[in-house]
Length: 346
Image (cartoon, rainbow, N blue to C red; front, side, top):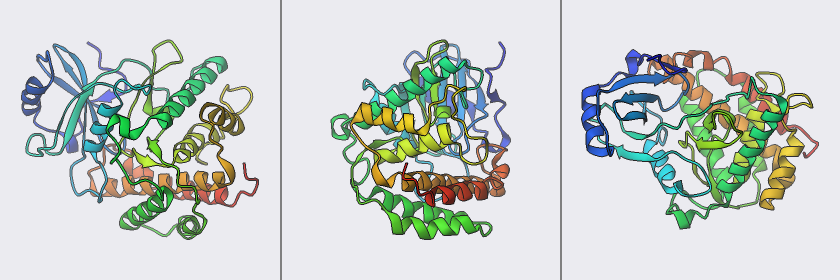
């Protein structure tokens, strides 16, 4: 059988005892039977993910990386919990088969979930404009559905602290950035100073994904339909506009490291169209703090990227491309600072 596209042999730094994993699978996955073959997904810079191919079918394992980890990072237990909680909701997620927090098994905590067939359209390339627009529409519908979930109704009332989300997030990522800092970046220092002075006074709280972008969705093999939302590592109770801004930065405006994505010919909706559609679906108006939300998204992404680079220097990153991440931090920060200074209010 040909290897699944986007997978490779398990990297040396992430190898684990596959026989021990097979034993765990026999205990926790209904109907599981071997033999087991393991490959690693190429994508992913934080928690490494692995394709498990067995006699009973395909599964996905997601685990913490090895080595020293930053405080509160790589919480696969939280990922497992939110995915499990959302099963049966309007937000499509994979079925999970169990969480193992016993690091003596394969070296770090992990969980196993079903393999969902479909497309991961990292930049929606190869689609006709009409197809691409339909995928973006489906993305917006799922995001609105996520922000409509009542956390208490799905057992996530204590999944984070209500209110003051941006204040806590700016503080958290400022600390994380300082812990992984390797050089001085003037735009990042400017954001570190500017963001705490421009915090929104809106304390609205919903369940937020934290990394909502096209590359973290599985789209139906032939239809513009979201089959599963992946990578819930940064999910928490927070402000819904943080998700919307991150989606806009990553999938519509561009991070500043590539050409702007949206125009009339690509099928990618404009920023204004995305905001209008979100308001129509949720009744929520981004309001006067939109530029802050955009700048915060780039700041956080820069801090995360800096952490990936620092792990690359330590030799325990999830991807060999981690060392390239250091080249992107300054560009992300500069894009964030430009958005912070944007005065059009849109």
